[in-house]
Length: 121
Image 1 (cartoon, helix red, strand yellow):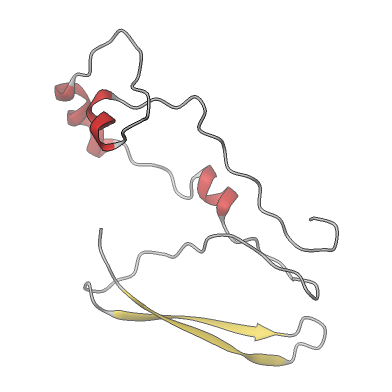
Image 2 (cartoon, rainbow, N blue to C red):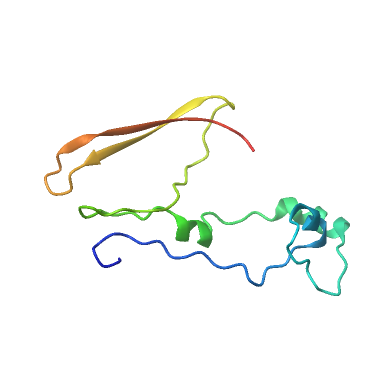
C-alpha cells in the first residue's frame, strides 16, 4: 500500500527488448523483427498454434487485476476486472451488480448496476 492507505498497482513491464516474428511485422510498423538466423516455418508453427492453451489466469492478468480489499476514506484503486465466460448469444444483455457496504457499520450503501452486451471476438 502507498502512504495514505490507497492501493497501488505495479507498473507494467516496458517492452524495450521485444521482437516480432516475421509474419506479424506488417501489422506493427516500427517494431523490430526477430533477428534470429532461423526462417519462419509456417507449416510448423501454424500446425501447433491452436494447441498452445495458456493457463488462466496468467501472471500478467493477476498483476493488472483490481486489488481486493477495503479502501480508506479518499482512497482509490485502479485495475482490470476479469469475468468468467458468459453463456449467451452475441447481443445478449448481462448485468454486473456490485453491492456497496460500509466496512465499519456493515450498513448497505447501495448497489451499482452496469449493463453489458455479450460480444465474441
